[in-house]
Length: 181
Image (cartoon, rainbow, N blue to C red):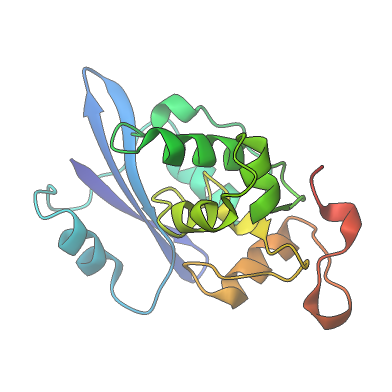
């Protein structure tokens, strides 16, 4: 298992990945935070190889582009989803479909996976999302149109959405036209 610290302007994004039989598998993406990125990664993945090692195939630039709000194609088979429950995988796969520049509600996402009463469970899965930016959990908002919580903090969530073109109106509510049907 390997890791890379990706520079996105003044911010650092962590990427943990492995390669099995030449196939790239991303294990986790770490959003910028207050603590040292390498220390966070080493804590979560004690068996990780040191020192950092650059990922192949331009994946680091894809992560930077996603962080900057740019639309990028991504193949979900590059993510290691094997450790997830069936429910968690279905939530993350559905969240992956939310287009750049749009948002969905927790309850809307729950309905899309065929479990309309599971909005809280959807929120719990997204709170544990190991692939932020790739699986755009920042694009999921509360039913009242307010931003809701986010692992990188509310300010980062707002910045990510604004970079994608989402506009907030009165009382920090996302305009209806940005909600994914």
